[in-house]
Length: 510
Image (cartoon, rainbow, N blue to C red; front, side, top):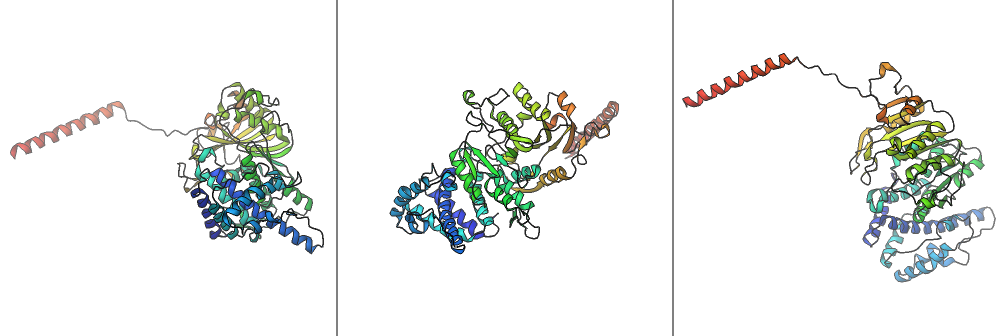
């Protein structure tokens, strides 16, 4: 990440350090305030670019700064410290909250924006660093990487329970469902929009000429120009209407929206909504859903949407049923769940698994090691991959034992990594890479991947835990006959007694 410029990385680190030492210690608050500054800088950059385009085309440009030139970054960033502080707080943020047009990207995500940088000196330092980033001169790759690097502070801070799904796990899930140009993609609990922008990148990667692409050391593609997308309407759809995210935290919707914008998405549809509540009624809309919904605690029963057939207050169960409801027939989903969803014995747990087996084509269960979300959570999780509709004949299980990082709190990079193997066999031959439990010849051999007949699953109360079905190979140990062992013991005792006698004789002579 940010391999194109170590200088930019250093400046982002410096920006973070300034906010931390300046008294904003909550990482989510710090990132939100940094995001506002980056957003304000890009607001003028985008307006200037649009003005230049209009001039070339000899058309009229309607600036968003009309009658508000004092709200331009280039104006207020030159003011003295205390004056800058008052101006940004009282005028610039008021301007942002009242930008016209309900379809305006800037308006959507600034309605509840508040400026809380506590010191004029901190604001001045932060403005200088943002200026030094030269955002308007960077391509979309660098802008997006820069913001992703900033968001990584949520992964390394561990404050207030705020942390993101690891990026390599997101990329694995995106590859498994393989979103395509023209499809509608959703995350009903989107957070920083990591799933959405990775789906966007995946589509562009598959529609960019190989000779144009460049990959960094993490395997992340760059120069995603989408030159193979011949239909301009499809390209416009991808950048404006293909991606939809929901979150019940207004701060996260703003951060998520700006994350998408800095990755080149013109009008991100990130909405402040509790998708489990009675107010949310979308149904059968999306072709692809990717999610890691919250699975701690439960929802107030009085606010649970009546759409749910499963009688429970557990959010991890309700979200999976919601995802099923939101998919069109034939739509695909990959969702992270706690292991309890796979083997829980309550009626709600079993009813949910019946939906996945009886009403979907349940394609795979990937059990992940408990250290994937450390140091913040040690719970064991799994990825469920399914297609709405279709018939489940057998389910592919994979026991992921390593994800490329140590499974302790440090999460250092390691060579052990099952993810490439998972993606490879998912795409080119799950059956060849698996043990089929109906194959008696292989019934005693254990592999990371196994295929399980759906009838076996039904007979086991729809249990979807891999431990229920995997066959462990026990090493046969041959033991000597008891009389042989006794002879050896007696022989050893005689040897010991002789040694003791020899020692006593030696001591008596000396």
